[in-house]
Image 1 (cartoon, helix red, strand yellow):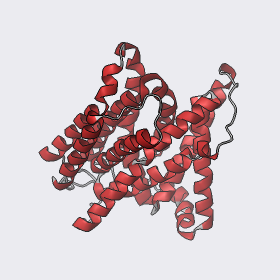
Image 2 (cartoon, rainbow, N blue to C red):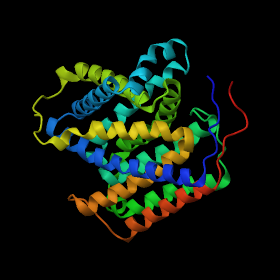
Image 3 (cartoon, helix red, strand yellow):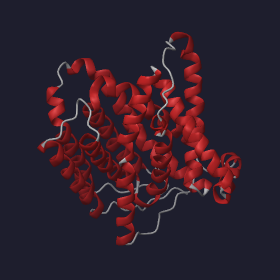
Image 4 (cartoon, rainbow, N blue to C red):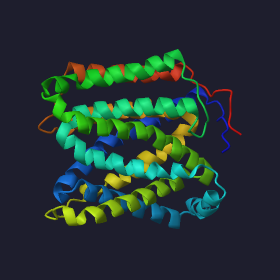
Length: 328
């Protein structure tokens, strides 16, 4: 697998990419709220995840049919796979996306948004650092400098601080251990997902096509799981009539597509840190504009979010360029 370094970004371009990545991260808490509500209505998190993926797959298919660029890139998929432009297991990124949606519908009702966010973000940071260091992404291995490592650690501190009021009020943490570990593992795999999508986007020549493959794989996997589970689960749920219940898949398209584009230019770790900032800002905005029964906005929430933003700024100016060694 050939991996080449991306050209150095000018400060203005890097700032623009940073803003786009943070803005894209804003979509994650909205998607979590939508998919969680859909899961409650359908009374099955896997069914909700499948609906979300089918909506996204339909939208991406229409885009590839209508626009020449994505259509040409989609036509190259069989050739790219046959030529082994990337390891076959990179296609598993779609399965990770499916489990992200499932975790939104299953873990949040059990552990709450606070602990879910801590577990997911911790996993994201760990996974992004590993795949960046070992070069699973399209830019190859990237150095993890001391300042960049400090920035990643401060991100975790900021997230913990932001959600600390809710963590303190949660008792019997032992009973929450399994869903937290599940969410942590999903978060770690999100680093691999971002790297795999970036490599696929480079191979196909279009990040939308990498996103399409994500939704194809994720939809097939969720469909099989649902068929196996169908005789064992209740079918009392009903499809809601509100249009907003069905936008989770569209938000996922944007999130995955932008991530696939950004990791080539910013690296997996820095892209992940920017999107984590967006997740925190989005959660704050949702709790202020559309609060739920468990919403808590206080000094720790705001201060933790600010600390995370500063940590991303530190990671941005600390280098983290590509390692000299390249795979040929």
